[in-house]
Length: 80
Image 1 (cartoon, rainbow, N blue to C red):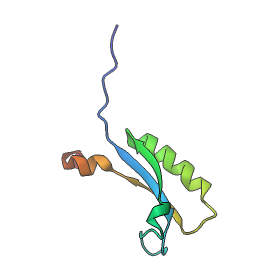
Image 2 (tube, helix red, strand yellow):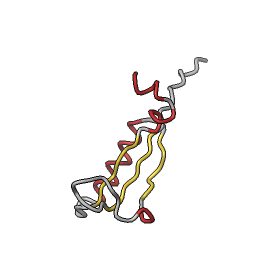
Image 3 (tube, rainbow, N blue to C red):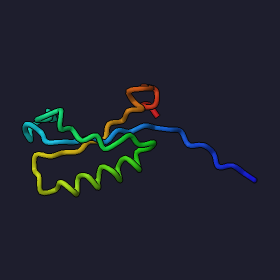
Image 4 (cartoon, one colour):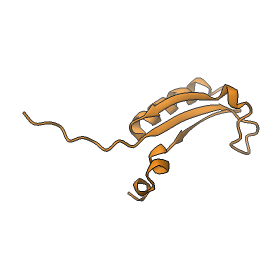
């Protein structure tokens, strides 16, 4: 019985909300920030981001972002 190799966990945060202006990334109201979740890899974060972005396509000021938490927690991962 062979075990699958464990993949390195690279945490990603998906969040979004209404922006104060389309020219920046300042949120209009932090109390209304939508924290979608923390994901173990970019692929799953991208899937969640895409779903939220598609739900809000008619709201021009609403944007969702993927934050690479693993780069903040371990800057060495940003080099690979």
